[in-house]
Image 1: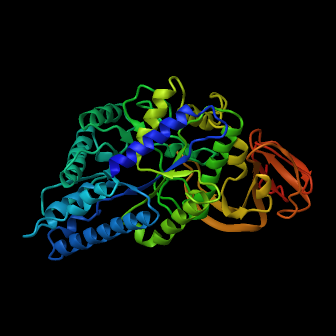
Image 2: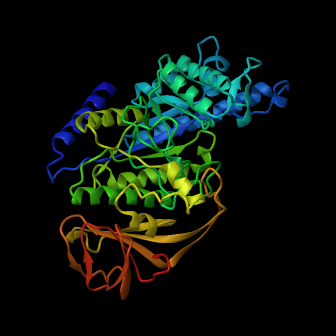
Image 3: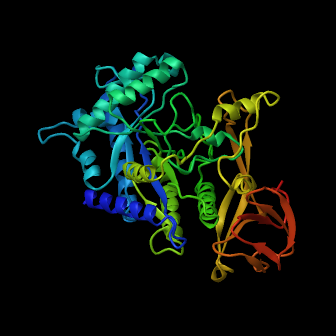
Length: 487
Protein backbone atom coordinates (compact mmCIF):
# COMPACT_ATOMS: atom_id res chain seq x y z
CA UNK A 1 0.00 0.00 0.00
CA UNK A 2 2.83 2.37 0.88
CA UNK A 3 4.64 1.55 -2.35
CA UNK A 4 1.48 2.20 -4.37
CA UNK A 5 1.00 5.51 -2.58
CA UNK A 6 4.59 6.55 -3.23
CA UNK A 7 4.35 5.52 -6.87
CA UNK A 8 1.20 7.61 -7.26
CA UNK A 9 2.93 10.55 -5.59
CA UNK A 10 5.91 10.34 -7.91
CA UNK A 11 3.64 10.00 -10.92
CA UNK A 12 1.82 13.13 -9.80
CA UNK A 13 5.10 14.98 -9.38
CA UNK A 14 6.28 13.86 -12.81
CA UNK A 15 3.00 14.98 -14.36
CA UNK A 16 3.47 18.31 -12.66
CA UNK A 17 6.91 18.66 -14.19
CA UNK A 18 5.58 17.84 -17.63
CA UNK A 19 2.74 20.33 -17.16
CA UNK A 20 4.75 23.17 -15.68
CA UNK A 21 4.13 25.28 -18.77
CA UNK A 22 0.38 24.81 -18.50
CA UNK A 23 -1.16 27.88 -16.80
CA UNK A 24 -4.09 25.72 -15.71
CA UNK A 25 -1.86 23.52 -13.55
CA UNK A 26 0.34 24.30 -10.58
CA UNK A 27 1.88 21.89 -8.07
CA UNK A 28 0.65 21.68 -4.49
CA UNK A 29 2.24 22.84 -1.28
CA UNK A 30 3.66 19.84 0.53
CA UNK A 31 3.12 19.69 4.30
CA UNK A 32 5.17 17.48 6.62
CA UNK A 33 4.11 16.75 10.21
CA UNK A 34 7.07 15.74 12.38
CA UNK A 35 7.31 14.17 15.83
CA UNK A 36 10.66 14.73 17.57
CA UNK A 37 11.33 12.16 20.30
CA UNK A 38 13.43 13.27 23.28
CA UNK A 39 15.48 11.33 25.77
CA UNK A 40 14.01 11.51 29.27
CA UNK A 41 16.64 13.88 30.72
CA UNK A 42 16.74 11.95 34.00
CA UNK A 43 19.31 12.84 36.64
CA UNK A 44 22.11 10.43 37.55
CA UNK A 45 21.01 10.84 41.17
CA UNK A 46 17.90 8.79 40.40
CA UNK A 47 19.68 5.77 38.93
CA UNK A 48 20.36 3.99 42.20
CA UNK A 49 17.00 4.75 43.78
CA UNK A 50 14.28 2.21 44.41
CA UNK A 51 11.89 4.17 42.17
CA UNK A 52 14.23 4.18 39.19
CA UNK A 53 12.49 1.51 37.12
CA UNK A 54 9.06 2.96 37.89
CA UNK A 55 10.26 6.38 36.72
CA UNK A 56 11.68 4.90 33.51
CA UNK A 57 8.46 3.01 32.86
CA UNK A 58 6.35 6.12 33.48
CA UNK A 59 8.41 8.21 31.05
CA UNK A 60 8.30 5.52 28.41
CA UNK A 61 4.55 5.04 28.75
CA UNK A 62 3.96 8.79 28.49
CA UNK A 63 6.02 9.10 25.30
CA UNK A 64 4.38 6.02 23.82
CA UNK A 65 0.88 7.35 24.47
CA UNK A 66 1.64 10.65 22.72
CA UNK A 67 3.34 8.99 19.75
CA UNK A 68 0.25 6.87 19.17
CA UNK A 69 -2.05 9.84 19.77
CA UNK A 70 -0.33 11.86 17.01
CA UNK A 71 -0.46 8.82 14.74
CA UNK A 72 -4.19 8.43 15.29
CA UNK A 73 -4.92 12.16 15.03
CA UNK A 74 -3.12 12.37 11.70
CA UNK A 75 -4.79 9.24 10.38
CA UNK A 76 -8.16 10.77 11.24
CA UNK A 77 -7.50 13.02 8.24
CA UNK A 78 -5.79 10.31 6.20
CA UNK A 79 -2.38 11.91 6.85
CA UNK A 80 1.01 10.34 7.52
CA UNK A 81 3.61 11.46 10.04
CA UNK A 82 7.41 11.69 10.00
CA UNK A 83 8.56 10.33 13.37
CA UNK A 84 12.10 11.05 14.51
CA UNK A 85 12.40 8.75 17.53
CA UNK A 86 14.98 8.82 20.28
CA UNK A 87 17.44 6.08 21.13
CA UNK A 88 16.37 5.86 24.76
CA UNK A 89 12.73 5.36 23.83
CA UNK A 90 13.57 2.82 21.12
CA UNK A 91 15.80 0.82 23.47
CA UNK A 92 13.17 0.85 26.20
CA UNK A 93 10.68 -0.58 23.71
CA UNK A 94 13.13 -3.38 22.91
CA UNK A 95 14.71 -4.05 26.32
CA UNK A 96 12.74 -2.49 29.17
CA UNK A 97 9.40 -3.80 27.94
CA UNK A 98 10.62 -7.36 27.34
CA UNK A 99 8.58 -10.21 28.79
CA UNK A 100 7.71 -13.79 27.93
CA UNK A 101 5.59 -12.64 25.01
CA UNK A 102 8.30 -10.52 23.40
CA UNK A 103 9.08 -6.81 23.46
CA UNK A 104 7.18 -3.61 22.60
CA UNK A 105 8.80 -2.76 19.28
CA UNK A 106 5.79 -3.86 17.22
CA UNK A 107 4.23 -0.39 17.49
CA UNK A 108 7.38 1.18 16.03
CA UNK A 109 7.48 -1.18 13.05
CA UNK A 110 3.74 -0.72 12.67
CA UNK A 111 4.27 3.00 12.05
CA UNK A 112 6.07 2.20 8.81
CA UNK A 113 3.54 -0.47 7.89
CA UNK A 114 0.81 2.18 8.16
CA UNK A 115 2.65 4.55 5.81
CA UNK A 116 4.48 6.76 8.30
CA UNK A 117 8.25 7.28 8.24
CA UNK A 118 10.73 6.77 11.08
CA UNK A 119 14.04 8.55 11.64
CA UNK A 120 16.09 9.70 14.62
CA UNK A 121 16.28 12.79 16.83
CA UNK A 122 18.41 13.39 19.90
CA UNK A 123 19.92 16.02 22.17
CA UNK A 124 23.26 15.48 23.93
CA UNK A 125 22.72 12.18 25.77
CA UNK A 126 24.47 8.82 25.58
CA UNK A 127 23.81 5.30 26.81
CA UNK A 128 25.89 4.35 29.87
CA UNK A 129 25.07 0.66 30.12
CA UNK A 130 24.23 1.13 33.80
CA UNK A 131 20.60 0.32 34.64
CA UNK A 132 19.44 1.56 31.23
CA UNK A 133 20.57 5.10 32.06
CA UNK A 134 21.10 7.64 29.28
CA UNK A 135 23.40 10.37 30.53
CA UNK A 136 22.56 13.97 29.53
CA UNK A 137 25.69 15.94 28.65
CA UNK A 138 26.44 19.68 28.47
CA UNK A 139 26.96 20.79 24.89
CA UNK A 140 30.50 21.92 25.76
CA UNK A 141 31.51 18.28 26.33
CA UNK A 142 30.37 17.10 22.91
CA UNK A 143 33.53 16.45 20.92
CA UNK A 144 33.58 14.76 17.51
CA UNK A 145 34.24 11.44 19.27
CA UNK A 146 31.31 11.95 21.65
CA UNK A 147 29.06 12.97 18.74
CA UNK A 148 29.94 9.72 16.97
CA UNK A 149 29.19 7.77 20.14
CA UNK A 150 25.76 9.42 20.32
CA UNK A 151 25.06 8.58 16.68
CA UNK A 152 25.97 4.97 17.39
CA UNK A 153 23.69 4.84 20.41
CA UNK A 154 20.65 6.67 19.06
CA UNK A 155 20.70 5.60 15.42
CA UNK A 156 21.68 2.09 16.42
CA UNK A 157 18.83 1.69 18.90
CA UNK A 158 16.17 3.11 16.59
CA UNK A 159 17.31 0.85 13.77
CA UNK A 160 17.38 -2.15 16.13
CA UNK A 161 13.80 -1.48 17.22
CA UNK A 162 12.68 -0.76 13.67
CA UNK A 163 14.45 -3.72 12.13
CA UNK A 164 15.52 -1.51 9.25
CA UNK A 165 17.87 1.35 8.46
CA UNK A 166 16.83 5.00 8.65
CA UNK A 167 17.70 7.84 6.31
CA UNK A 168 17.03 10.89 8.50
CA UNK A 169 18.67 12.06 11.71
CA UNK A 170 18.02 15.34 13.54
CA UNK A 171 20.99 15.68 15.93
CA UNK A 172 20.58 18.75 18.16
CA UNK A 173 24.31 19.31 18.66
CA UNK A 174 26.64 22.24 18.06
CA UNK A 175 28.14 21.69 14.62
CA UNK A 176 29.80 25.11 14.31
CA UNK A 177 33.50 24.24 14.68
CA UNK A 178 35.58 22.98 11.76
CA UNK A 179 36.17 19.69 13.58
CA UNK A 180 32.47 19.12 14.22
CA UNK A 181 31.55 20.08 10.64
CA UNK A 182 34.00 17.51 9.31
CA UNK A 183 32.65 14.89 11.72
CA UNK A 184 29.06 15.64 10.66
CA UNK A 185 29.93 15.01 7.02
CA UNK A 186 31.62 11.76 7.98
CA UNK A 187 28.74 10.63 10.21
CA UNK A 188 26.10 11.26 7.57
CA UNK A 189 28.10 9.17 5.11
CA UNK A 190 29.06 6.41 7.55
CA UNK A 191 25.48 5.91 8.74
CA UNK A 192 23.95 6.13 5.26
CA UNK A 193 21.86 9.21 6.06
CA UNK A 194 20.62 11.66 3.43
CA UNK A 195 17.91 13.75 5.15
CA UNK A 196 18.53 16.46 7.74
CA UNK A 197 16.80 19.42 9.38
CA UNK A 198 17.99 23.01 9.03
CA UNK A 199 16.66 26.48 8.29
CA UNK A 200 15.90 27.73 11.79
CA UNK A 201 18.52 30.45 11.40
CA UNK A 202 16.47 32.11 8.66
CA UNK A 203 13.78 32.88 11.26
CA UNK A 204 16.27 35.14 13.07
CA UNK A 205 16.00 37.65 10.23
CA UNK A 206 13.33 40.41 10.08
CA UNK A 207 11.35 38.10 7.76
CA UNK A 208 10.90 35.67 10.67
CA UNK A 209 10.26 32.63 8.49
CA UNK A 210 11.84 29.34 7.52
CA UNK A 211 12.84 28.34 3.99
CA UNK A 212 9.79 27.35 1.97
CA UNK A 213 11.49 24.56 0.07
CA UNK A 214 13.77 21.64 0.82
CA UNK A 215 17.28 22.27 -0.47
CA UNK A 216 20.74 20.76 -0.52
CA UNK A 217 22.74 22.60 2.11
CA UNK A 218 26.38 23.46 1.64
CA UNK A 219 28.57 21.83 4.28
CA UNK A 220 29.80 24.39 6.81
CA UNK A 221 27.11 26.92 5.87
CA UNK A 222 23.78 27.48 7.54
CA UNK A 223 21.67 28.25 4.47
CA UNK A 224 23.85 28.28 1.36
CA UNK A 225 22.83 25.84 -1.33
CA UNK A 226 25.12 23.24 -2.85
CA UNK A 227 23.46 21.11 -5.57
CA UNK A 228 26.20 18.49 -5.12
CA UNK A 229 25.51 17.97 -1.42
CA UNK A 230 24.62 14.34 -0.63
CA UNK A 231 21.92 15.26 1.87
CA UNK A 232 18.62 17.07 1.57
CA UNK A 233 17.57 19.68 4.13
CA UNK A 234 13.92 19.72 5.22
CA UNK A 235 12.99 22.82 7.29
CA UNK A 236 10.52 22.37 10.15
CA UNK A 237 8.95 24.80 12.61
CA UNK A 238 9.33 24.20 16.35
CA UNK A 239 6.73 22.97 18.82
CA UNK A 240 3.20 23.58 17.58
CA UNK A 241 1.26 25.67 20.09
CA UNK A 242 4.30 27.00 21.95
CA UNK A 243 3.91 30.77 22.35
CA UNK A 244 7.42 31.42 23.67
CA UNK A 245 9.95 29.32 21.75
CA UNK A 246 12.80 27.70 23.65
CA UNK A 247 16.51 27.45 22.96
CA UNK A 248 17.53 28.52 19.48
CA UNK A 249 13.96 28.46 18.17
CA UNK A 250 12.61 31.91 17.33
CA UNK A 251 9.20 31.31 15.77
CA UNK A 252 6.14 32.04 17.89
CA UNK A 253 4.39 28.72 17.49
CA UNK A 254 0.76 29.42 18.34
CA UNK A 255 -1.68 28.01 15.83
CA UNK A 256 -2.84 31.42 14.60
CA UNK A 257 0.78 32.52 14.03
CA UNK A 258 1.64 29.32 12.17
CA UNK A 259 -1.46 29.80 10.04
CA UNK A 260 -0.20 33.25 9.06
CA UNK A 261 3.15 31.82 8.03
CA UNK A 262 1.37 29.27 5.91
CA UNK A 263 -0.69 32.01 4.25
CA UNK A 264 2.55 33.81 3.40
CA UNK A 265 3.73 30.65 1.66
CA UNK A 266 0.41 30.32 -0.18
CA UNK A 267 0.67 33.95 -1.33
CA UNK A 268 4.28 33.45 -2.47
CA UNK A 269 3.30 30.35 -4.41
CA UNK A 270 0.28 32.07 -5.98
CA UNK A 271 2.41 35.08 -6.94
CA UNK A 272 5.03 32.81 -8.50
CA UNK A 273 2.34 31.10 -10.55
CA UNK A 274 0.73 34.36 -11.67
CA UNK A 275 4.05 35.88 -12.74
CA UNK A 276 5.24 32.84 -14.68
CA UNK A 277 8.09 31.82 -12.41
CA UNK A 278 9.47 28.28 -12.75
CA UNK A 279 7.85 26.04 -10.18
CA UNK A 280 9.75 24.71 -7.22
CA UNK A 281 8.93 22.25 -4.45
CA UNK A 282 7.02 24.46 -2.02
CA UNK A 283 6.84 22.88 1.44
CA UNK A 284 6.32 23.59 5.12
CA UNK A 285 6.97 21.44 8.17
CA UNK A 286 5.30 21.43 11.58
CA UNK A 287 6.40 19.67 14.73
CA UNK A 288 5.43 18.27 18.10
CA UNK A 289 7.27 16.27 20.78
CA UNK A 290 6.09 13.23 22.77
CA UNK A 291 7.16 14.85 26.04
CA UNK A 292 5.33 18.12 25.24
CA UNK A 293 2.43 17.00 23.10
CA UNK A 294 -0.07 16.32 25.89
CA UNK A 295 -0.33 20.03 26.68
CA UNK A 296 -0.51 20.86 22.96
CA UNK A 297 -2.97 18.24 21.74
CA UNK A 298 -5.63 20.86 21.10
CA UNK A 299 -3.11 22.94 19.12
CA UNK A 300 -2.05 20.03 16.91
CA UNK A 301 -5.69 19.18 16.27
CA UNK A 302 -6.58 22.79 15.49
CA UNK A 303 -3.69 23.24 13.05
CA UNK A 304 -4.44 20.01 11.18
CA UNK A 305 -8.16 20.79 11.07
CA UNK A 306 -7.46 24.27 9.68
CA UNK A 307 -5.03 23.07 7.01
CA UNK A 308 -7.39 20.33 5.88
CA UNK A 309 -10.55 22.46 5.95
CA UNK A 310 -8.98 25.42 4.14
CA UNK A 311 -6.55 23.75 1.72
CA UNK A 312 -7.05 19.98 1.82
CA UNK A 313 -9.09 17.77 -0.54
CA UNK A 314 -12.66 19.00 -0.81
CA UNK A 315 -11.78 22.43 0.58
CA UNK A 316 -12.33 25.78 -1.20
CA UNK A 317 -8.69 25.67 -2.39
CA UNK A 318 -7.35 22.09 -2.42
CA UNK A 319 -3.69 22.99 -2.88
CA UNK A 320 -2.10 21.06 0.01
CA UNK A 321 -0.67 17.57 -0.14
CA UNK A 322 0.45 15.97 3.14
CA UNK A 323 3.57 13.83 2.79
CA UNK A 324 6.25 12.21 4.91
CA UNK A 325 9.81 13.49 4.77
CA UNK A 326 10.80 10.50 2.63
CA UNK A 327 7.98 11.22 0.17
CA UNK A 328 8.97 14.88 0.03
CA UNK A 329 12.51 13.83 -0.78
CA UNK A 330 11.21 11.71 -3.66
CA UNK A 331 9.24 14.65 -5.05
CA UNK A 332 12.32 16.88 -4.71
CA UNK A 333 14.48 14.37 -6.56
CA UNK A 334 12.01 14.32 -9.47
CA UNK A 335 12.05 18.14 -9.59
CA UNK A 336 15.84 18.16 -9.31
CA UNK A 337 16.28 15.77 -12.21
CA UNK A 338 13.93 17.82 -14.39
CA UNK A 339 15.37 21.21 -13.39
CA UNK A 340 19.15 21.10 -13.89
CA UNK A 341 20.81 24.25 -12.64
CA UNK A 342 17.68 25.53 -10.88
CA UNK A 343 17.93 26.79 -7.31
CA UNK A 344 15.53 25.58 -4.66
CA UNK A 345 16.69 27.90 -1.86
CA UNK A 346 19.94 29.77 -1.30
CA UNK A 347 20.65 32.45 1.28
CA UNK A 348 23.89 34.01 2.48
CA UNK A 349 23.18 33.68 6.20
CA UNK A 350 26.76 34.40 7.20
CA UNK A 351 26.75 37.56 5.09
CA UNK A 352 23.41 38.64 6.55
CA UNK A 353 24.68 38.15 10.11
CA UNK A 354 27.79 40.17 9.30
CA UNK A 355 25.62 42.98 7.93
CA UNK A 356 23.73 43.08 11.24
CA UNK A 357 26.78 43.30 13.48
CA UNK A 358 29.04 45.20 11.06
CA UNK A 359 26.71 47.33 8.91
CA UNK A 360 29.51 49.69 7.88
CA UNK A 361 31.57 46.83 6.49
CA UNK A 362 29.22 44.14 5.20
CA UNK A 363 26.64 44.58 2.46
CA UNK A 364 22.96 43.93 3.05
CA UNK A 365 21.65 40.57 1.89
CA UNK A 366 18.41 40.55 -0.10
CA UNK A 367 15.26 38.64 0.75
CA UNK A 368 15.41 35.34 -1.18
CA UNK A 369 11.73 35.38 -2.20
CA UNK A 370 9.52 37.82 -4.11
CA UNK A 371 6.93 39.20 -1.68
CA UNK A 372 9.08 40.77 1.02
CA UNK A 373 6.41 43.41 1.65
CA UNK A 374 4.04 40.69 2.85
CA UNK A 375 6.64 39.14 5.15
CA UNK A 376 7.35 42.51 6.76
CA UNK A 377 3.80 43.83 6.68
CA UNK A 378 2.43 40.76 8.45
CA UNK A 379 5.27 40.33 10.95
CA UNK A 380 3.86 39.00 14.25
CA UNK A 381 0.35 38.94 12.81
CA UNK A 382 -2.01 36.01 13.27
CA UNK A 383 -5.00 34.74 11.36
CA UNK A 384 -8.56 35.70 12.28
CA UNK A 385 -10.23 34.09 9.29
CA UNK A 386 -10.95 34.03 5.58
CA UNK A 387 -13.21 36.73 4.13
CA UNK A 388 -15.38 35.59 1.24
CA UNK A 389 -17.09 38.82 0.24
CA UNK A 390 -15.24 38.90 -3.11
CA UNK A 391 -14.47 35.22 -3.56
CA UNK A 392 -16.81 35.00 -6.58
CA UNK A 393 -14.58 37.56 -8.34
CA UNK A 394 -11.47 35.48 -7.63
CA UNK A 395 -10.19 37.76 -4.85
CA UNK A 396 -8.36 36.23 -1.88
CA UNK A 397 -8.85 38.11 1.40
CA UNK A 398 -7.64 36.99 4.81
CA UNK A 399 -8.15 38.99 7.99
CA UNK A 400 -5.33 39.09 10.54
CA UNK A 401 -4.42 40.98 13.69
CA UNK A 402 -1.03 42.05 14.98
CA UNK A 403 0.13 40.61 18.29
CA UNK A 404 2.70 42.29 20.52
CA UNK A 405 5.89 40.24 20.82
CA UNK A 406 8.71 41.33 23.13
CA UNK A 407 12.15 40.18 21.97
CA UNK A 408 15.48 40.43 23.72
CA UNK A 409 18.75 41.77 22.32
CA UNK A 410 20.18 39.92 19.35
CA UNK A 411 22.67 37.28 20.45
CA UNK A 412 25.88 36.27 18.72
CA UNK A 413 24.02 33.37 17.10
CA UNK A 414 21.72 35.89 15.45
CA UNK A 415 18.61 34.99 17.42
CA UNK A 416 16.50 37.62 19.14
CA UNK A 417 14.91 35.49 21.90
CA UNK A 418 11.18 35.89 22.45
CA UNK A 419 10.72 37.13 26.01
CA UNK A 420 6.97 37.61 26.14
CA UNK A 421 3.88 37.50 23.94
CA UNK A 422 1.32 40.23 24.60
CA UNK A 423 -2.14 41.17 23.43
CA UNK A 424 -3.56 41.06 19.92
CA UNK A 425 -4.62 44.42 18.45
CA UNK A 426 -8.12 43.62 17.21
CA UNK A 427 -8.90 47.33 16.74
CA UNK A 428 -6.50 47.66 13.79
CA UNK A 429 -6.94 44.52 11.66
CA UNK A 430 -4.73 43.74 8.68
CA UNK A 431 -5.87 42.14 5.43
CA UNK A 432 -3.91 40.04 2.97
CA UNK A 433 -5.47 40.73 -0.44
CA UNK A 434 -4.73 39.61 -4.00
CA UNK A 435 -6.37 38.26 -7.16
CA UNK A 436 -5.93 34.67 -8.26
CA UNK A 437 -6.36 35.69 -11.89
CA UNK A 438 -6.44 39.02 -13.71
CA UNK A 439 -6.58 42.44 -12.14
CA UNK A 440 -9.04 45.26 -11.64
CA UNK A 441 -10.51 47.78 -9.25
CA UNK A 442 -12.79 46.46 -6.54
CA UNK A 443 -15.00 47.73 -3.75
CA UNK A 444 -13.76 46.12 -0.51
CA UNK A 445 -15.79 48.34 1.81
CA UNK A 446 -17.84 45.34 2.97
CA UNK A 447 -14.58 44.08 4.50
CA UNK A 448 -12.81 47.29 5.52
CA UNK A 449 -14.09 50.79 4.81
CA UNK A 450 -12.78 54.31 4.46
CA UNK A 451 -9.33 55.42 3.43
CA UNK A 452 -6.91 52.50 3.37
CA UNK A 453 -3.18 52.15 3.76
CA UNK A 454 -1.89 49.68 1.17
CA UNK A 455 1.51 47.99 1.38
CA UNK A 456 2.76 46.54 -1.90
CA UNK A 457 3.72 42.91 -1.30
CA UNK A 458 6.77 43.09 -3.55
CA UNK A 459 8.20 46.59 -3.20
CA UNK A 460 7.00 47.25 0.34
CA UNK A 461 5.91 50.75 -0.65
CA UNK A 462 2.86 52.10 1.18
CA UNK A 463 0.20 54.09 -0.65
CA UNK A 464 -3.36 55.16 0.11
CA UNK A 465 -6.62 54.18 -1.55
CA UNK A 466 -10.34 54.40 -1.04
CA UNK A 467 -11.99 51.15 0.02
CA UNK A 468 -14.55 51.51 -2.76
CA UNK A 469 -11.85 51.60 -5.46
CA UNK A 470 -8.91 49.35 -4.56
CA UNK A 471 -6.62 48.13 -7.35
CA UNK A 472 -6.11 44.38 -6.90
CA UNK A 473 -3.97 42.09 -9.04
CA UNK A 474 -1.44 39.28 -8.77
CA UNK A 475 0.80 41.21 -6.38
CA UNK A 476 -0.35 40.50 -2.82
CA UNK A 477 -1.22 43.55 -0.73
CA UNK A 478 -1.30 44.13 3.00
CA UNK A 479 -4.20 46.49 3.64
CA UNK A 480 -5.38 48.28 6.77
CA UNK A 481 -7.41 51.27 7.82
CA UNK A 482 -4.41 52.21 9.98
CA UNK A 483 -0.74 52.63 9.18
CA UNK A 484 0.27 51.48 12.65
CA UNK A 485 1.96 48.31 11.36
CA UNK A 486 2.58 49.26 7.73
CA UNK A 487 5.85 51.10 7.97
